[in-house]
Amino acid sequence: MASSALNMGNIAKGLVISICGGLLFAFLRIPLPWMLGPLFATGGVSICGGGISATPGGRQAGQLIIGSALGQYFSPEITLQILAYGWAILGAGASTLLFAWLSGKLLQRISRIDGTTAFFASVPGGAAEMAILGERAGARFDRVALSHSLRVLLVVSTVPVILTWNGAIGTDAYEPLTRQISVTGLSLLLLMAMVGGMLCARLNIANSWLLGPLAVSFLLSINGFTLSAMPPVLIIIGQLLIGWSLGVRFEPDLRKESYRFLLGTMASALLSLLLSVLMGLGIAKVHGISMSTMALATAPGGISEMCVTAKILKLGVPLVTSFQVARIAILLILTLPLWRLVQAKAPSPGEW
Image 1 (tube, helix red, strand yellow):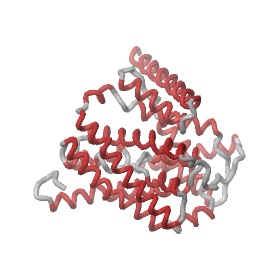
Image 2 (image 1 turned 120 degrees about the horizontal axis):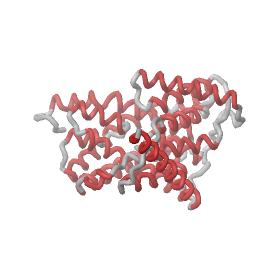
Image 3 (image 1 turned 60 degrees about the vertical axis):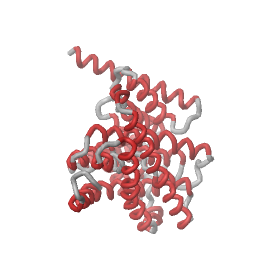
Image 4 (image 1 turned 180 degrees about the vertical axis):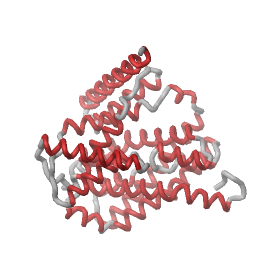
């Protein structure tokens, strides 16, 4: 009973700190205040041993909201336009493996960790998913998970700010199919989204609580069904829940990590970000797409975080979502088989 009360207290503290962080960032006019504010506020307190927790299922709930909102941008006309970029989407996703190889080499050289851990710590396919795949290949689960958390933190805290400072707001005219809010329609949409999330989770699909609701909302939109727009307050709640859940990952143990590993992780993440954005700018030049949109579409951040950034900044939401979803799918399918293929030809285990 005492333990339960303590946990509830830690969750309550996390909520208050998240709200305060969001309000502060909103007051300071920092981009994505309701995601970055809670992330930095709870992350700082967690690293200092503040004893806070995220609400159970909070990240999943936030992803459900964001996924449902993102799917509403896929009108039949927009979907046909995106199909024209099919090869670019697939090429960008596959190229990420090359970038992961290069950034993993850098991480290994600086931090002096084993090659398996360095590689899986550098593939931007989702923290939990890459940690699990890496563990199967012999990588250190904790190092892989920490490296991905730091990468997402770096990308989420820099890319939106840089884009905003460069005036990259509202350059793409993508709009959701409806702006009218219906209580009945919204309730039905969220219920269907929950079923989609549960089904994807049951099938062990990565990012199930984002991709399931996104698929449901997408299927409704491309068939012309508009149940309800997503209320702005729900979008704020979704961002807060995602930022809060990311922040509490940074526990006091982070301070005990070696300087070499932390430096290597940040250098690796910067290299991956630079290569990905350069590729995105190249695609933008060839296809005549907004460079800001393609920078977000190819940035190796979390799929939820990059897509919600596109939504808030009004930067080609369907296109960014398509590139990010394709990247995750390609990496989850190819990473482990390709690693095993490389290992089969390596002179000794762990070399690449």
